[in-house]
Amino acid sequence: MKKAMTGRGILFVVLSLVLVAIIAYGVSTGCCQTEGLAPVEVREYEGVDLSSINAFRENSIKGPQEIDVESYALKITGLATNSTSYTYDEVVSRYQHYRKVVTLDCVEGWSVTILWEGVLVRDLLAEAEPLANAEVLIFHAYDGYTTSLPIDYVMDNDILMAYKMNDVILPPERGFPFQLVAESKWGYKWIKWITEIELSDDASYRGYWESRGYSNSADLEESFFGD
Amino acid sequence: MTNQQLVRRTIHWLLTVLVIIYLLTGFGITQYRIVEPLTFGLLTKNLAHRIHINLEIPFIVLLVLHIWLLPLLKRFKLKHLSKNN
Image (cartoon, rainbow over all chains, first blue to last red; front, side):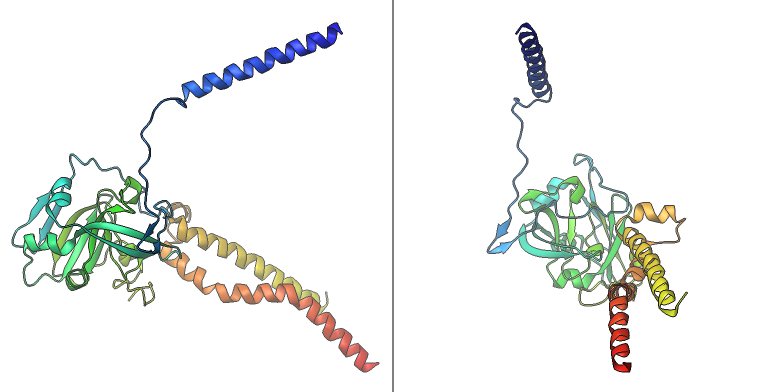
């Protein structure tokens, strides 16, 4: 009887210690503190089911980039009458916003359908006034990645430079502050972390993946291997 | 070693090698930042991609042979024997 009581006593002490440890752990990790909630993304838009912003695979050349919005500048350079530089707020507040649902198809075999919101590259270029001999836009990213697109394609297809996806500001790993929505092109044309748009007459320019054997035109209907 | 055993063993080894290459090139596509330096730049993302895509049909053929060759041969042999008897 005494032995049983001692056993119960030990069990009681052990359970009490475990309970105290659990409470202490909870308090130390802040389980009971008020914290800001993560932004809520929309998953359906005008009857279209959207992918999650977490459905992307991270396949950038140097991993996610953290850009300080205070020091960020988007430069428009090259064959333009007015080479300009914008802050993040200037880009977001000065130009008309547009939204559209576009699917990104990656050469790796996955795809995501996202509601993109941003400004038209065409509107940005209008202010810079491209020269007549500008044929190509070379996009530069913060991590050194580059890609190019014909200026006519960008002008004729309402190409967006997105700052929101599924109603959420682009997270750093998705390309904050801006990602190009190069619809009808393979994913490697959808450059993230854009820092510069260069107007060029070099139609043969090949970006990072294009110079490594991937197609320069990158049309979805065609093979992504070199042209 | 009979001819049948030789064929089976060849298919078995070919399939093994092919599966290894298939896996490596798959990683070469998705984990190129690791695979490229590990292979001293030999297995680039583009090369891995091309190899991986071109291995699809040989892989299916070898897999089918690996699974069905023995039963087919057995059935063929049985039929052959019963006809001769």
